Amino acid sequence: MLDRIQAYIQEHNLFSPTDKLLVAVSGGLDSVVLAHVLHKLGVEFAVAHCHFGLRAEEADADEQFVRKLARQYEVPYFVEFFQTKKFAEQEGVSTQMAARALRYEWFERIRQAQGLDYIATAHHQRDTAETMLLNLTHGTGLAGLHGIRPKTGHLVRPLLAVSKPDLYDYVVENRLIWREDASNDSPVYQRNRLRLEVLPVLRDINPSLDHTMSITAERVGGAEEIVRRYVEETAAQARRDEATTTYLDIRTLQNTAATAVVLHELLRPFGFSYLVVKDIVQSFGAESGRRFESPTHLLVKDREQLVITPRTLTKFGTHQLQAGQEALKIDGLHLRTELLEVTEDFEVPRGKAVAALDADVLKFPLTVRAWQEGDWFMPIGMKGKKKLSDFLIDQKVPLNLKDNVQVLVSADGKIAWVIGFRPDDRFKVTEETERVLVVKRM
Image 1 (cartoon, helix red, strand yellow):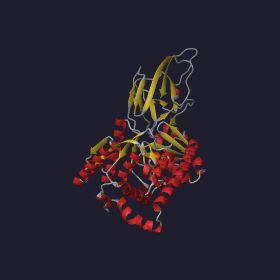
Image 2 (cartoon, helix red, strand yellow):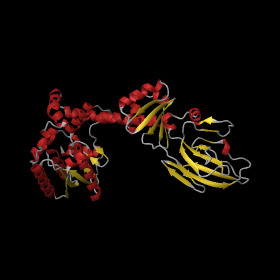
Image 3 (cartoon, helix red, strand yellow):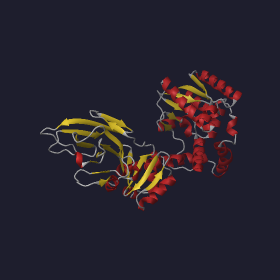
Image 4 (cartoon, one colour):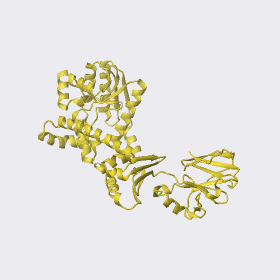
């Protein structure tokens, strides 16, 4: 078994012979085997033990056992006593989830503080099978079917090459002693029910179930990598990011294989579920304006694109820009101003992010505010009025971006610039202009 584990470590480049590990040891059979294996392989390591305060005297005995084990191997020993139930209540999570969060956060702190390279846990093939089936029961994509990865960041799992029977054989052969955790037999936990009631039936059908599922996990992991690359290629063609807004080209998406699957991967960072994504795909042929929400973002189907914005965008209030003020930062908007004298070589700056305004026509203080129904202005180059609502329609501004449009207003109430779009003709630079206020959106 040692040779198989050594080969697995090398195959997956888990760590090098000179790396130092922090080994998570509960005192159970799996982690006792892991510590013994690493000791036999000559790996330099320290032992970390978590006391979750859940099993009274039994947990105290576990801690004493692991402490003696570390002393036996003559390696550094670290222990932490957690108030797991209190933490679970504060965070509103299950005891198991609380214990997981506490231990991995603590492991990483110890790893960094002690200058160790990796954290090793004792997950094995049976753990992979349980994880895959549990994820499948709850509903999952490829990410839930690749099981437990050999290496994730600073976490390594050297025992994924071996089965539970292998571990039993190893402790018998090496006469190892371990501690039994009675909670592993409690039907209260979903994983335990799966382990005790479901998996035995499946092993009757396939005695090599753990190994078979381990191979399946490896193949799924490979398929996931293929999908990841395909999604990246699609994103390069379909995605455009501007400030806090993301645009996805519908036509490009429609030309992909398994459109809903690809779109779900693209929208994963924005929190959209697969069922919502399927509805989004159905909306591709519908009229513009369909809205979809995730806990964090709003998506609008707008003509030939999907427009995604954060739901946490604040509504702009009213803010003033005084004469001589060079910058204004409000609610995610950053404006910079520069007052210039007009000379013979002066050129009016161009672009949506900049406005060149006749400073002597403007009346201060200037006001920055959100646009309102009934607002109108005279877009530069036009002599007539234009309702701002109609202007935004003409500019094809998506619904979820309209609320974030702001205007720069002169003290006499005239809109001087629809910020990011068009200045007002009444404030444009002319041959009579002597001073120019240049306002840039940064």
